[in-house]
Amino acid sequence: MTTSSPDNAPSSTTLPLILVTGATGYVGGRLRRRLERLGHRVRCMARNPDRLKGRVAGGTELVGGDVLDAETLGAVLDGVHTAYYMIHSMGARRGFEELDRKAATNFGTAARAAGVRRIIYLGGLASEDTELSPHLRSRHEVGRILRESGVPTIELRASIVLGSGSLSFEMIRSLVERLPVMLTPHWVSVKAQPIAVNDLLEYLVESLDLPAETRVFEVGGADQASYGDLMREYARQVGLRRRMLPVPVLTPWLSSLWLGLVTPLYAQVGRKLIDSIMIPTVVEDRSADGVFRVRPRGMPEAIATALRQEEQEFTETSWFDAYSSADHHETKAGIQYRNRMLDSRSLATELPPEKVFGPIRRIGGEAGWYAHDWLWIIRGALDLLVGGVGVRRGRRDPESLHVGDAVDFWRVEKYENNRLLRLRAEMKLPGRAWLEFEVEPTAEGSTVRQTAMFDPSGLFGLLYWYALYPVHGPVFEGMLEGIVRLAREEGA
Image (cartoon, rainbow, N blue to C red; front, side, top):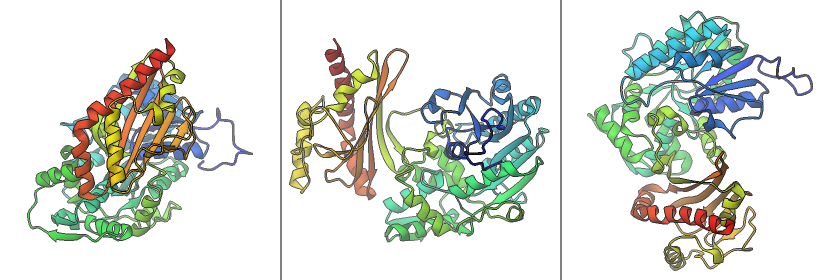
């Protein structure tokens, strides 16, 4: 069921329908793309399907639904052969266990009523004989509820997921790159069995070929490793020297605050993560080895793969994409995405995309930056003083742009006419920076989103970002308003 060639592939209407829940999340988003590439017939459920528009393949169905609202699930599951359950409430401020319990019960009941043939669930790895953290306890409980629903359920239990953009990997990256010396509490030495995200996806896809029966499989990479081991290996591969100083006492609450200061995690998620890290998560039941064709890679190769794919995956899903990671609240400025700092702002207008994109296409050079040009001139002069390119390069052409063109001290990295412009900074910086403009059509006209991204290099890079943060508001907001204002004047 997992492979077919284009020449003998069955009609899309005869293929079994596969439902992917959690398709806006980290693993769910990658799973959806993997299934699409393999030619499967896919339906994605999301509370807000608009978040997936433009990101899914042409044949993929988008449906609205909420596992906490049982009445929405009948239509979602109608005609579904296999349903992937990739949902959890880790980011909820309170009562996440009850939310997970209700969600799983609703989904299992609706799946049985709809005649779903199989549920595939991604749970958490930990021994049943261990005193589990609330998070892991809830993951196990969800698996039990789905298994008892009457629908054959394959439950895959996994430990740390290693991949660019995964919550654990980005925490490791941030700690290593920002802290030359680390105070390491006990949880840093607890053993786990990390798995590369691509290997985990293979397990999930191969589960489609298993008999329709209820099974629990523990899956992990080839190596057992603690977070300390992962941080040391990451530091080795990126060429950093880091020192770890064990401390006898550092409570989970203090650890979560510490993580919130130096990583993309906020304390609420960090506390739940640490509670689970303090419990060994290693594979004890190796029955998966005799059932699946997957031969997971070791920890060093998993980290190396994540680093190689980092830039390719930058525009793909991250743990931040999931609604649950932010408890349904979206922040437009001052957020962190992986190791990057973001300032993202949007403005709706009655103008069509091609009109709004005109000023964006002409930005820089003689046209300027549409707000506070004197600040850009000062920044360019400072760049020249330290050996940078400054703003003296201007533009090749005042009207047209192509990938690779210089725009003052930026370079065009990606360009789609009337839709997208991404500029990569070439000024001297303690890190890397991008400026992106994206225009999307709406029923009333269009929305233009402007995002500044900064990938800081160490603590000095963070200090640079926060030192300039007070001017981000007037500069970036003024630029966005200036673009729309000029577009209106030109359209008048």
